[in-house]
Image (tube, rainbow, N blue to C red; front, side):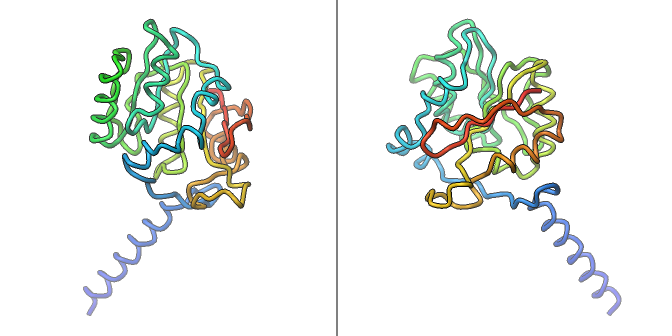
Length: 218
């Protein structure tokens, strides 16, 4: 009986830990699951819905700069960034799923781009080089982090002084936006979670149809 009670206590404790890890300790925001697979990422309507070139225009990608696309998936944004930084620039395409990195590499090769470096990260570490990145971009990715604080610390280490961290997130303030609630964020939520990790809020750009462009600096 005592062994059974001990086992139950251990299981309950483990469940409590698991439950606690599913929510951000500061905002109590529930972490989301990973959104759709390759078909969703390559859907024909994505260009109109997200307007990626308009987003990159607003962010400002300098020729010759070093950029990281964290959570790059199939390389939808990675390849666009590679064209923007040019031959003298570098784009790190980072993801924790090897199959996604393979898709990204194939897409880059098909487009004749050789300034992209694939990086296999973990859910707590981007594995990006230290103090080497001018800009890190997260496109509909931050809300999926299961360990956002650790990831923010890893990205801060990778950024150069005053380097930019840019989030594209669907607007949770827009209640009519047909996106699952866990896959949307408010500007206030991002600031409450990111600023305590050593970032300074720069600006929020609201020129896209459905997404915030939220910019922080190291």
